[in-house]
Amino acid sequence: MGDLDFLRRCIQGENASWDIFVKRYSRLIYSYICGILKRSLAPELIQDYAQDIFQGLFAYLVEDNFKKLRTFKAKNGCSLASWLRQVTVNYTIDFLRRERQMISLEEENDDGLNLKDTIADSSLPVSLLTEQHEDLSILKECFERLGFEEKLFLELHFNQNLKLKELMRVFKTSRAAIDMRKKRIILQLKECFKIKGYLLDL
Image (tube, rainbow, N blue to C red; front, top):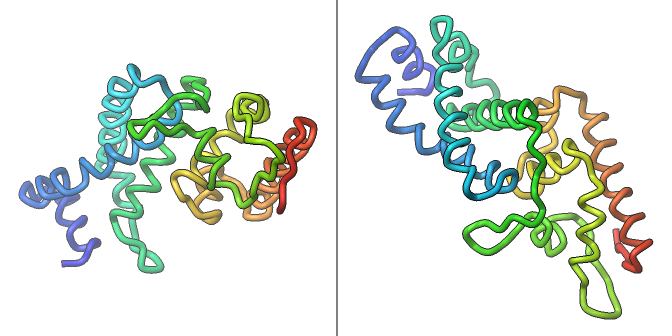
């Protein structure tokens, strides 16, 4: 059974299909939410916020007679799982914007990594060249100067692996604007790193 037929059964009120939907996609949705929150909130806040977002998102999917779920059309081979990922990312970002929570570059995840280290190590399409060892405590200042939207862009593009086309939908803007945003962020970091005595090989 294809995703469209399966979802149609869910929307039509077939209990067995809806049970499968909840069982199949609940954990997936929750993991997407937590993936973003781990870079955005203190560890002790993640569970509570994730639960609130998860419940709100499910309500959003089914409200007004499944209005949001009805917008899934499986265009260009997009699977239901991929579509739900995008919806979850958008919903979570909107939540964070409302809450005015800033992404923490210092907060470590379960692997002992943080956004700052990940970006400095391998995420950005640049390499940091230094005569001495990298002083991340100094470079941190460059990332802290970025605004919420810029930090969010880095998190989604480099850590959550969202493509530029997906970021167009997230930030509700054109491809040209997304390309310009990415270029502007890299240039901003490059200038800051240069002032700190670091060179970027683009």
